[in-house]
Image (cartoon, rainbow, N blue to C red; front, side, top):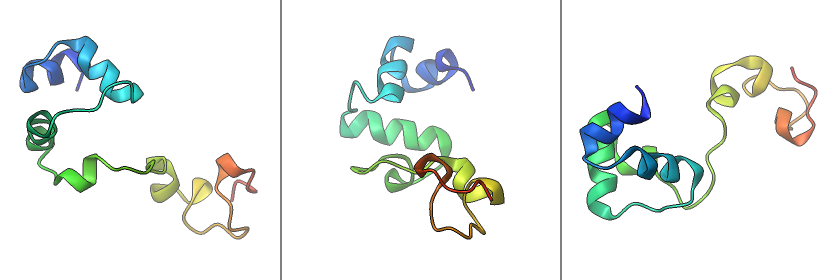
Length: 80
C-alpha cells in the first residue's frame, strides 16, 4: 500500500502519513483508530510508547529468532 492510498483511506494528506512514519507527528485517537481499521489490527499492534523491533528480527532467523548470542543484529550481534 502506498502512502497516497493509505492517506486516501484515512482521509489525510500524504505528508501526514509520512510524518507519522518518521515519528514527527502523533495521531489523534480518532486517526489512530482509522489507521488500525484499515489494517484490521488493534491499536496496540500498530502504536506503542516504546520502539518496535524491526519485523525482520521476529520473522527471519538471521535477524532475530534463533539467535545464539542474545543480541540483535542492530546491537552488534553475530547475524545468526
